[in-house]
Image 1 (cartoon, rainbow, N blue to C red):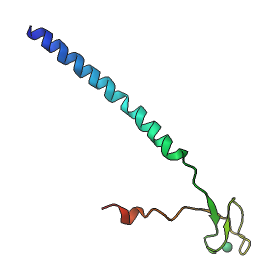
Image 2 (image 1 turned 90 degrees about the vertical axis):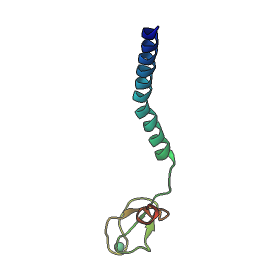
Image 3 (image 1 turned 90 degrees about the horizontal axis):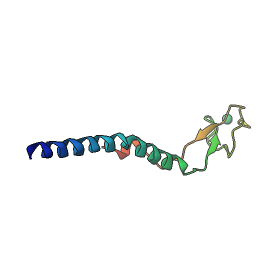
Image 4 (image 1 turned 60 degrees about the horizontal axis):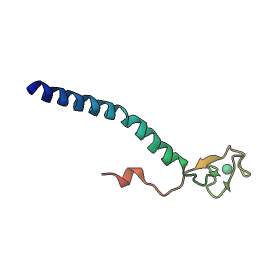
Length: 81
Ligand SMILES: [Zn+2]
């Protein structure tokens, strides 16, 4: 009788291991969901913040390559802790 219990525990344990092995897959799909949301990207000049463009190019004022402007909604340094 005790052997049956051991078997059941062993099966449960291996089942849990298989389940745990599948977790990274779920993590990946969660990451994809995060990336799927398209944010409006704007390009700006590092020297001229007033220069805004919805596509990459060069600053009309100084000719510098425009950089992606990230939405200033998140403040990672201040939000956590
Ligand atoms: Zn500029």
